[in-house]
Each structure stands twice: as C-alpha cells, then as structure tokens.
Image (cartoon, rainbow, N blue to C red; front, side, top):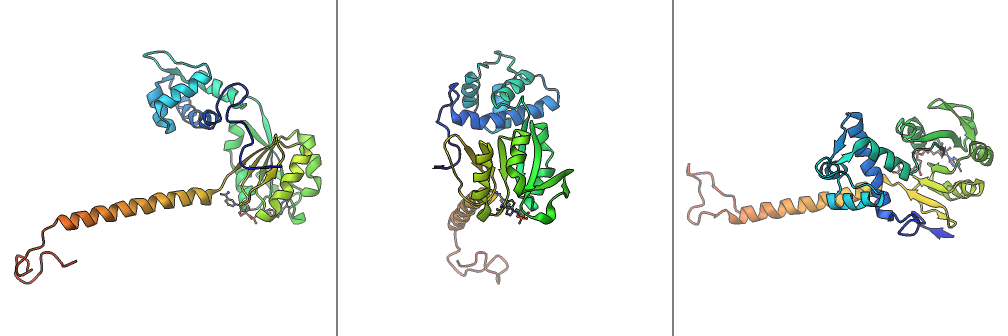
Length: 253
Ligand SMILES: NC(=O)c1ccc[n+]([C@@H]2O[C@H](COP(=O)([O-])OP(=O)(O)OC[C@H]3O[C@@H](n4cnc5c(N)ncnc54)[C@H](O)[C@@H]3O)[C@@H](O)[C@H]2O)c1
C-alpha cells in the first residue's frame, strides 16, 4: 500500500514532467478566458502573466507539447486549448461519482464547472438512508449499498470523497475495489491506496494557513518599517513641547 498525493513517477511515460502537468490546468484556464473573449493569439509573456507563471517556464512547458508559437505572433489560442485539453485527457467525457452528499458534496454536485471541463457527475452516493432517492442538483442520491454496482454501471474511474474523515478510508477502499483509479479527497485524512491509484487531496484550511503565514510576515514587515520610521524621527531634546507650547510634538516611545 502506498500513501500520498499522486503516485506517479516525476516524469510521465510520454516525457512530460509532473510539474509541467500540474501547470497545464493553469494555462488552460487562462486560455479558456481568452478564447471566450475571441482573442486569436497570445504572447508567451501575456499568457504567463495571466496564468501566474514565469514566461521562460511556460515556453519550456509548451515545448513538451511540441508547441513553439510563432515569433512576433505568439501562440494560437484555440489550438493551444485543444492541445492542452487533449494532453490532460479532457477531450473525452469523464464520469465522476461524489460520495458523501452533505454540505460540501451537494455544493460540488451543484458546481457547473465540472461539466464544462469534461467531468460529468454520473452519480451521487451517501450512507444516509433518508437521503436515498432525493435529488441534489437534479441527480437522485443513491445509497452506499449500491456503490460497487453504480461504479461498474457508469464506467467510473474518478471518485470524489466528501465524507467525514472517519469514513474516508473505507469509502476509498470500496471505490478502488470497484475499479476507481483516481480519487479527489476532500476529507481531512491521508488515504492509503494501492500502486496505480492517484489521490489528490484538497484542503482549503491548509491554503488558508499558508495565507495566514504570509499575512503574519507582511504584518511583521510593516511593524519593522514603522519602527524604523519612528526611529528616524528626531525627538526634540529641550522641552519636549510642540509648537503651541503644551502638546508634545513627539510622544515618548
Ligand atoms: N477540503 C476542504 O477544503 C474541505 C472543506 C469543507 C469540508 N471538508 C471536509 O469534507 C467532508 C464533508 O464535509 P461536510 O461539511 O459536507 O459534512 P456533512 O456532515 O455535511 O456531510 C457528510 C456526508 O457524508 C455522508 N457519509 C457519512 N459516512 C459516509 C459513508 N461511509 N459513505 C457515504 N457517505 C457517508 C453523511 O451522511 C453526510 O451526508 C468532511 O470530511 C469535511 O472535513 C473539506
């Protein structure tokens, strides 16, 4: 059993490094926005800025796709959307199941962005018998008793886990035994999966903690700058009184 995020070698069989694969969705999101505005071409600098990536890195990433752009013109937006979508396997329909249809699972089911990116929510599964048959986002929730049959009937290879942490490992094992080979895990727990199964973990609290770290650093820098500015102000040596004679110009620290 292996544990972790994605169980893949650093370089995929077709020679595209995993770090490049991780940036492809960022390029695709920026390119899709350009495409929606009917922008025909884009320079590597513009696209890099829109994707939040260094432009030299972008050119290197695109060289793995065999896409070099045209000097003075840039990259053809539509063709690049097609190339990246094909590379990410998005030109085919991916049926997805969501397990755990509580607050988060229902929000995910209602998210329209999956379908437009090639991910069809094929089924919603929950352990609560009271939820069985009730529609969420127009899809009736099915009971976990039928999990294996649902996976097989729908040819599902991607499962989303939105159950409480305590149930996630068992749900994961059932999904994998039924044929799921990719899991997006929202539960705050590390899943153990066999080799050949990819797990991606989404944890918004970790993202917030990283932001908190940066906020703290910014606050520290501001406090330091303020202290330096205060130290630079010369404290009057004589009476300590201000120009009107009774208000000190500078308060003692
Ligand atoms: N990753 C993130 O950023 C993030 C954000 C919010 C919540 N979460 C996590 O997502 C999970 C769901 O959160 P929520 O607020 O929707 O909780 P919730 O209690 O509203 O929903 C959980 C659902 O899972 C179902 N469930 C329980 N055991 C199950 C099982 N064995 N099989 C199938 N379904 C089962 C419950 O019946 C319920 O409908 C929690 O683990 C939570 O910590 C993660």
